[in-house]
Length: 353
Image 1 (cartoon, rainbow, N blue to C red):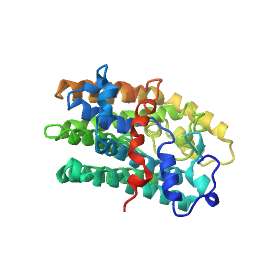
Image 2 (cartoon, helix red, strand yellow; image 1 turned 135 degrees about the horizontal axis):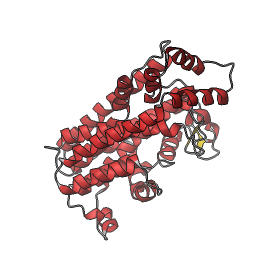
Image 3 (cartoon, one colour; image 1 turned 180 degrees about the horizontal axis):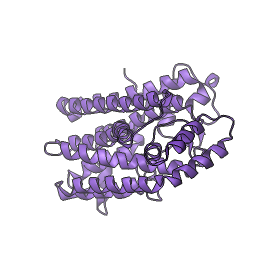
Image 4 (tube, helix red, strand yellow; image 1 turned 45 degrees about the horizontal axis):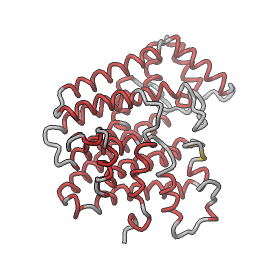
């Protein structure tokens, strides 16, 4: 879709074309990887052997489509988030609402949500109606929690009172980030035959992992991002609620708190000047060090949950998830997983007749 304009597309197929292009455009594909990895761990862990690629190729299309559904929900949330935050770039390209308009982007996000549910619901004959019902229920619950978390963020962003406690920030993170990890793990377990004895572990592990992951994202926000052309410190300058902001408010003097709140909306200062002063206040409050300590704390909690999990293959996978998701490897997971998922999004297969 590079260089394409809305006027150059076929109106009948444009929504599908834009959605499929965005679905394969970028990202690490961590979530479908998790689904497939959990499924593998609970069905013999042959995917990690020397012949793992051959074993992976033996999975049915229904397994891959269920895994891909997690990614479609994630990509839909990105489309809608970019609109709500009016972000300009995603995956090194213009965001969909900047390229095609807000109305079209909203519709593409909605299409991706529908596609996510359809990728699972269409496989009742292969996976069984009970398994499909359980997975759809999990996806719907995760979708609702994500929307609640995003709603909390938007209400806070648009409110006059910018006070935020670290506990409230972490509650938002638990709603916004943890459900995707929980759904990815649950689907993998359900595809393997059942989740009995695992649901509580999956829920607790995903919560701790999701919170740690989001705090790391907050810290990375202060490094900027050339690929997405993001300004360092963009979260605070756009008024998004973060645990860094909350930690600053609990540590700074009253006068410094007032200055911090005024800086966010001080249009008289350049973005660079505001960024430098906010960064200085954050350092004075020890915000970055405290945030890293929180990452360590939630990472430890995730590992403690994993310690109690059986079988051993799943436990080792959970340790691996902590290591890779919280300390991403140099090689993108997308290079491993996306070629395999290509079979799942044929336009003639996915369109509901």
